[in-house]
Figure (cartoon, rainbow, N blue to C red):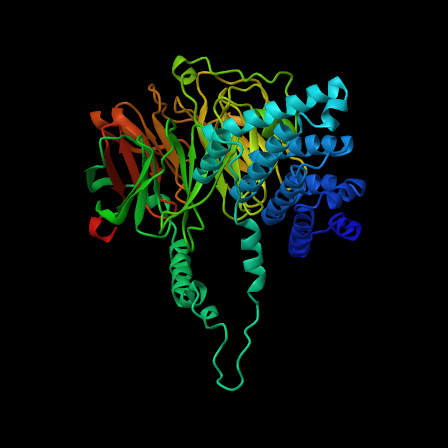
Length: 590
């Protein structure tokens, strides 16, 4: 056992180098401790549970973290066998339960399920050992601490049952709370063994020449290789012909004035390569439309988030097999397969009690209370803000009522750290680039920019500035290739920011006297769209007005979004209708 612990304490430059070895070593410990109290006592002597707790909170591989939770669960389970426990075992169980409770905020549902099962074993251990000699002989303070840990674990499981975005996690938590004596478990160990039983090489029967693993050839990757090549070529052609400013001179509405449902569209996104768009409505559903206005074959995806509102919608891996990333106002992120509508992953991205307190970095504000915008309409709203970075496989998350930005590594399914923005009215928009720079548009009209290339901590590039206008939070940001940012406030103010110096200047041009309901900036066309109470304005990124379309219906605009490469703009209205605007002269070619 000591040799295995030495292996787990070996540092590695990359988690891929040792993830398989660490996974097997951790599973070995879990199986060795199952029902073996003597082995658990020896584990305490070599500090094996401490090593697993460290790996559970720091290792980059979700499978290794799940295996650590599984092994800690078997360690706690063996303590419930009726054997009298030493005082050191009881202390070690409390420490393990405390660490496991924190890991209920892990980004991987696989890890969270194993953590929940391990905590169930701790609750069972507590109920069985409260009358044992070990606990009776312990000092009074230790007994009180043990009861405190028990109460915290119970409270954490109740929180999971009430707010975890994973349906399996909610079911598991409710089972534990309903009947503590009912056994719970997962098939994680069997799943790991099944993965390792499949050989990576193909062995053949020399007599018949038939592969003994014929199903290896019949996988999705092999059958899809030609289709994938076609997709990549199509994507290359689309990226090679981006829109220019001249393409937006004559934007007009095409035949797509459809009423989606009785629910209002909250977010709309055009797929950058496929010919469809996705609409998130106020009933927490996703509706899929072809660009001609027709519903797709699988047109509805029910998110099923009761009591929450969809605030963000984005495409992950849009160049290949598309996933859909959804963020709701309870700070939950869900990732679905766009084809099968299967839930791939889900987690809570923002949690003040754990995520910010344990991952805080960067400049710290003098107060932890966020200064809310003084505008009355902004006080009553809470919006979850998410930025997906495809090149870095990262998610930046924040909210209009929080003063920090959380950085999540989606490949590792863990929060790297959080970045304090100061008391600046909350975060209203986020943007990032391929180099690791992140910018946040704040509620006081300023921006915060961070260098996140380091895995350990972020560096604030643009320091906190004096508030510009607390009535005008920044609602849209766009970065260009010259280390500059363009910001749009909810009053239509355009401001250019220099990332290196932190200086900013308001762009001259016709200003709107009405509040901007929605805004977006085209990624390649140097064009932005603003929806006000009576007009849809198209401006250049230098502030010049191209043209505007004046209609009374624009007072009901709820969302709008440009296509990433083409001259298309989708607009959603509060009455449930959608409109599409294009610069093409022939709508049939859209």
